[in-house]
Image (cartoon, rainbow over all chains, first blue to last red; front, side, top):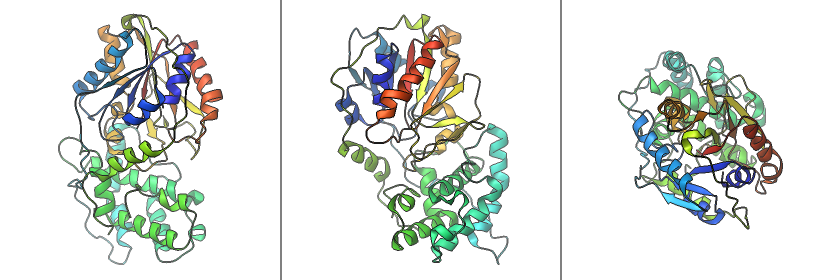
Length: 228
Length: 157
């Protein structure tokens, strides 16, 4: 992003960047940067808190008044990520003959649909829509059980995109099942990978691909890098 | 089930990784003096790879950009990295793309105008960032200048 700061500024635009990694700004010297130690994925800090977001913008835009640059300032508030899995109910088993992850995904469909209706948007759909999520999980189960990943029938042939859609489906559904404010940064991730059957399938497929010698990027980016 | 891991490792691991990676070097820092904020047209440029749901999604090493009309809120998160929280964007797009906050600032007279179009890139670029530096970045700047933009707020994920 600091590259874009330089490029846009050189083209005559005054830029101010919200920065999530301070050392990068220290080395790249963008014209104006506000370092915000907030959970990654939340550059404005707190979802659903317009006052906090405005406070961030006020501090950022204040840098436009500096007579020269580069300027690197720090937001005084640190918002820590929360890696405790969020408390989110999962559906009971409905079809005991089906794969648990598939059963689980089918059970979350109403919540996903409510989320889409409430927000009018979804990040599901890079390679599969909500109707295809159960089949995508079946393909990952096959990989976990030893099927070659390239022959498993993954939608679009890409496990990273398949997992993106599955994870987005789950996290968007969860928004309708969790009370109170949006959970902390990575709490939804922790819930998906540590508490759901789908998350367990993703990790099992990832380990199987690694063991089978699949190209590293194809399995590694199925899950956050610190997860094994 | 996957292994448990220590609290706080996810974001810190990514920040530590970013600390260790080489970055493109710039010998000088360009500096444009903006008009007063209350008279400025402000645009968002995000590297979150958000895009409107009916637009072409981002590929894994996409060096291009997408334009987002001011009125659009039907946005999908198209970034390929799994290493950041996505739930906040799902709940409130303003935590990544603060378009409603800009509208409020314009209504209050704090900023002059909200730009008619905003820009999204993918943050995961090839190491040399040559295309963004020489081609797609300047092209995005040209589009923003065409719209009369004075000030750009950059947001990552």
